[in-house]
Amino acid sequence: MRFVLENSLLLIFGAVVALVWVNAGPASYASASQALAFAVNDIGMVFFFALAMQKVVMAMRPGGPLGSFRQAGLPVLAAVGGMAGPALIYTAAAHALNRPDILGGWAIPCATDIAFSYLAARLAFRGDHPAIPFLLFLAIADDALGLIVLAAFYPAGAIDVVAMAAFLGPAIAIAWILRRRGVRNFWVYVAVPGVLSWMGLYLGGIHPALAMVPIVPFMPALDSFERWWRVPVEGILLGFGFVNAGVPVSSVGPITWVVAGSLILGKPIGIVVTTLIAERAGFRRGQGLDYRGLVTLGILAGIGFTVALFFAMAAFPPGPILDQAKMGALFSFSAAVLGIAVARLLRVR
Image 1 (cartoon, rainbow, N blue to C red):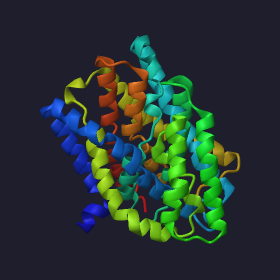
Image 2: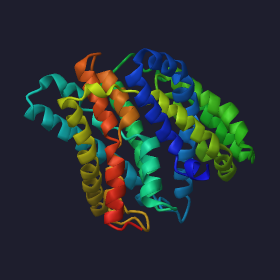
Image 3: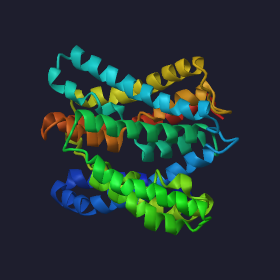
Image 4: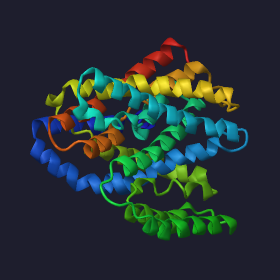
C-alpha cells in the first residue's frame, strides 16, 4: 500500500477503470461520473493543488531551487514557451492537412495536466530533484495562463471580476492577518480564507480547484499540512482519474494525432528554447537542474489530459472532431512513458 500511495498508482487505476467502463457501458459510466464530477473536480482537487503549491512554496524559500527572482521567473517564462510551441505546431499541422475547420482548437495542446505530469515526474526523477518543483511551478503558471486564454478566446460566459474580487480579496487579507497573528493550525486557513477563495473563483468563472493556491503561501505549518493531506489526496486522485478519463477508444482520427503530436513535440521544444533565451537574459536554472533534466521535464509537461479535454470541449461542438480531439488529449499520456525512458537514457540523477 505504501508503494501504491507513494507512486500515485490509485490515479492510474481510476483512469483505467474509467476507460474500461465507458467503452463497455457508456450510459452507466456517464451517470456515475457526472454524479461524482463536482465533488472530485471542484472540491477534492482543491487539496491536490494545495499540496502542489506547498511544494512550490518550499522550493521558493531561501536556498531552495526556486529561491531567487531569476530562478522563480524562469518556470513562468518556460510555461509561455511551453504554450507557444504546441500552438504553433498544431496550427502548422492544421494548415498542412488543409483543415481550417480545426484551427479553433489551437489552444488544446497548450495545457499541462498537473496531476499526471507530477506523477510521471516523481517516477522519472525520484527523490527531491529540483526538476519536480520547476515542473510544478511551470504547470501552475501554464494553467493560470490557460485560464486567461480560455476567457479571451473561448468565452462560455462573462467573467465576473467583481464577484471574484469580493471574495478573493478578503480571503487573501484574512490569510495575511492569520499569518501575522501567528496562527499555525492549517484548518483555520482552509475553513476561512480557503472557503472564501473558493467562492470567489467559483462565482467569478474561474475553476475553484485553484482556491488554496493563493492561500498556501501564508500558511506557516506547511509540513503538517502536507503530512495530513498526503494520503487523502491519493484517494481524491483515484476519483479524479475515474471521473475524467472516460473517453471512447473508437474516436481515433487525424485530429487525435495533431493534438497528441503537438503536445508531445511542442512542449519540450517550447520549454527548452524559451529557457535558453531566458538564461541569456539573466534568468537562472535551479542548482542541480541541467539540460538533461530540462528536456525530460519538457517531455513530461506534454501530458495534457484534463485541461486539454476542457479546452477541446470549449473549442468544438459535440461531434467527431471533438471526440478525436479528446482522444488526442488522452494519448498524450504516452509523454509519461517517453519522459521516463529519456530520463533513464540520459541518466538523469
